[in-house]
Length: 354
Ligand SMILES: *Cc1c(COP(=O)(O)O)cnc(C)c1O
Image (cartoon, rainbow, N blue to C red; front, side, top):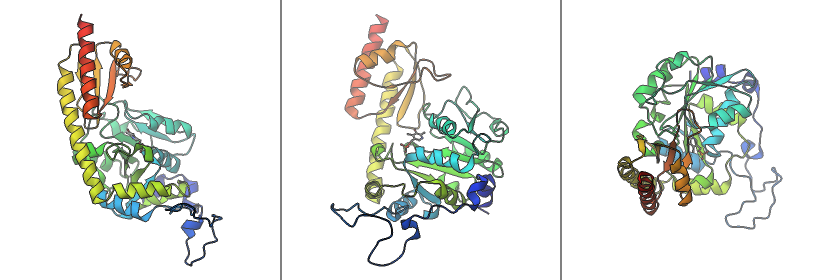
């Protein structure tokens, strides 16, 4: 039964609740639409005087084709960030339930939990950034386990062979949320094809990274229908603006996906070259392997971040994160940006050696 675990774990008040019946959701047929207090003045082309579809058909259809799932297994959201919050609001009772995260990882799981008064149970990654071998025994009753793969900010990766036994073991007790924001850079690691098999598996996706649409704010929750239906009770009545759906649908056609793949191939190449060039520099202690479009590098001290800043290059300082002392996270930019970055790093290395 794909619904039973989701219903067992959901906040009980949601089960009986009927979602807000927006005019669009109720629908209807006719040629005069006077049911949603919209304006009749369609001034622009395309016009935006009407509310958008609750889950725009073309968008859901195109993403389900891309992810090889059914439309019932796809929910579009205002970025993956909104999907994270939706999951917490759907399953976690404030002041009572908890989520589990494996640190260091993406910061929004803990922030979203905190804003919902939901506790965060932390099970740190090992020194080599693998999952704690006893992870499934350390959940303290959490309803949601967040695993980011490839992981931000470490770039480290887990294989489906490593993840599936965890999902299987927790199939009666906990929803495993695999955040695949960067999966296009390591597509072979995706868990999406296992959704059919596991009612407790959720995969999060976004158009913000490989699809080059961060400004659009469009993400997806992939899961069995039981979970998607519950999240549809919690999400806003018109979550996807019409222009967003139009642009996103276009970029999710076969031609759009092909362009994304070409960009990914180029960025992966640039990442490999950068890794090679930066590894030989004096003062670079560790260049971590990454399955994403960024590379985490540990330096010998704090001066690198400031020197880069003085050269006008802005990177993400991770030094304040536990176990990431002297680590900087570099996004992979364009060819010319990476050229200037490596030249600047070479210069800093030289100055520090002098
Ligand atoms: C960027 C990122 C997100 C947020 O994605 P949006 O769709 O832009 O909200 C979620 N998870 C991880 C791991 C990210 O790095």
